Amino acid sequence: MTDPQSILEHARHGAAPANWRVFTKKRGKLSGLLHGSSRDPDPLLVITPEGTVEYRDDRTPPDVVGFADLDGVELKVRGQSFSDSSTVSIAVWLDLRYRGGGKAKWRPAAFGEDLQAIQGFLEAYGAHKALRGG
Picture 1 (tube, one colour):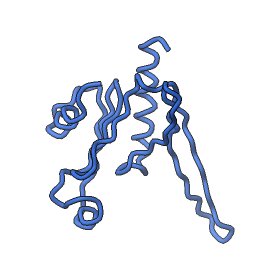
Picture 2: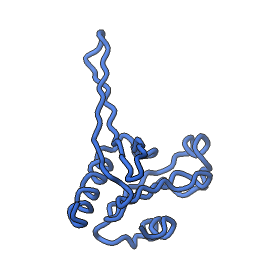
Picture 3: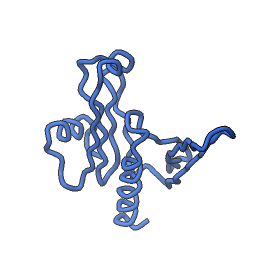
Picture 4: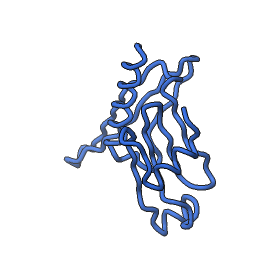
């Protein structure tokens, strides 16, 4: 996978190739105080044909997932409701299985409620796997 900082810079400046999915979110003043600095660039998630890069703030290194490192991905959903409510709360994430035997839960930190981000990951990973013969 290409350098994560380079991917973020291309996406931030509008120079992302057509086969990248770019998700941005405005950092509010309260969010800036709680999760970094209000002077930090806005959160950014980039899904490329080779993997994902997520920028949260300047104090946290980018979260990088390389599709070539994965052995499998499984969509997980959990719903919760209360007996006195007709509302259901749904949590969605991806369980990642790495080639070395490790496992991780993936849900983009700044875009966790954006199901299009999870869908984009699944589509890009599926295309990567199909093009690499496996």
